[in-house]
Length: 593
Image (cartoon, rainbow, N blue to C red; front, side, top):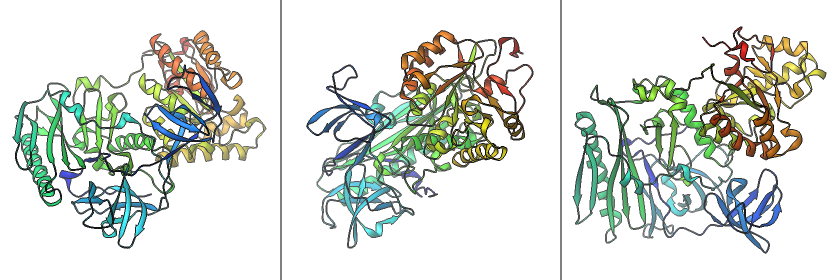
């Protein structure tokens, strides 16, 4: 696994590269995934269908707004939903490189010549894609900008890589302009300004906390000096400026956070630099990651899962592995821990800078801060209120992500009963599910009828599945078996008892596997749901994902707590026994003390 290396210059560790004028025109191809996909006359699901295209069909992508793509297939031009297309940029890919960690700005030039125009500037330590080599120069791609750099300034990353896809999720983009309206709840506002020479305007807070104010002033002086020198050296005669704005949030009377962002522009260059600060006003000190979190490994796991989910598909040889330095980019916000990652720091630079928010509902339990507001976000289950366990069999699949999104939106949980054979191809989905608090159960390796299987085959099916889940998640332990077809024998029970696993049957079968109907799946759940049920669904069907997007909000609104199988059974008044089959938890068996 490629170990991520962080920049040695802490001041300039956080930066963002923006798409600029002068970038080479790129064409894109979209491939239909996950069944048939309609081409619509306009960017609306209600518009006329121009035809249905099966999985694997390739179309030319003309425009992409993040939700809809304007596409062309033969003589037909219409719209397809971006979510159901695998989008690839059309150009030659050689390998992946990393700009050397020397604390300087690297110029991407229009031609392989030191006198050629500068198209873009990036900081050291950025990961980029090399598409061409010519003598002592390499042509690399950063964002959608192609530029030439000297070979001595880049180093190859190990491993063979597929071309990364380029569809964008705007949820993760950082918006500098939005800082003008961001809360400024800490300290009093200050401004430094100069209009002549290299102009700048720097807005920042005076916190009246010595350590924070000293850090802010040092950062302002160092960044201004650094970019001023670059402007004089590389952009004489061009327009340029340096702007700083900030966001300051008061979590409560004790805890505060500040995020300063500097934006350097010079000619066609635009770079962002970030300074995150978390403050304990009571102790008059700046908080470190260790001060704020008692289990940084879980925090890294959650961040890793979010980042892998941004990748459009797994790449051969490229794996994300954020380390503790990534967490230092984070600031507390009112609803979660915001982590600002610059282009090229934890992801290839083509993804730009990234904002990841880890909600307190998922991480508050590992935080050390003594904040009643944050601690109130810790998820609790009230056994005196109705509980149900949604379970999804046979995945993961390309449809699982839709279910995870709606579960996270409503702070709900479910149990995903995975087939081992599907785990590695969808490892990022498995990790994301766990990071959001969901449960992974075994549905065996490849769905054999255990009633017709030998003891050795049963054991291998379970062990192989448990092992692959542990392998891709860094040690997650599977504690629940969902037997294929619901078939259980004494041998199955005995092996599960040895492996410390309970057996999850179901009380309500949605029949989604038979009907393949969104409405019928929705109606089956909503008409038959009751306290304590384990409900059988399958996340390999688009219709089930669509039904989940309707069912989950309505169940929550009706007062149901959506829990995992293990969470549900943890309230059994007699406890649970490994090797035992459970299909529901009767209300009279719920422990409420």
